[in-house]
Length: 186
Image (cartoon, rainbow, N blue to C red):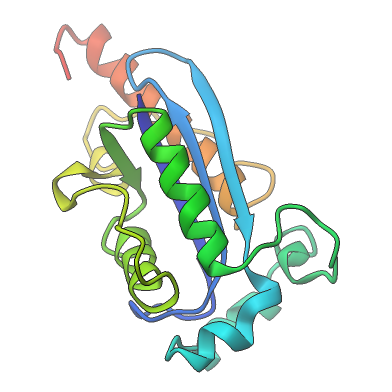
């Protein structure tokens, strides 16, 4: 299986504070989407900044301009089981990747999501190995830029890490299907 990941953050740098991590397993050659992973780290913002993770004022202003559904990640839900520490997220995400024998990890774009996630492992989860190699990363943005890529309707709630991951996985599936119809192979 492949995994699609998405992060929501408070900066655009590799050291960004991470609000949430979403992932979904999928088969790019079919319409199958599998198990999901979702973790919110918003109860641990101080812990992240104490280890050098950053908050960008422009990103905070951008979040303030988003709709209520997108800003739900900031809601106070202390007892929500998806809320966890960076260390717990790192262990759980590594298990999710390993248990499902993930071969490729997609993101829109790996230069953002994968780089920030790797940095989070380094600063807030010492002792945990990053769960996949740099050669496993694939770019949704590159595939979506191909001339035969079908135009897709926008998803209902943008900027929710899990919803974005699922939407991006479906985008890759529709593009791979279009490639197959054109007589190619992926």
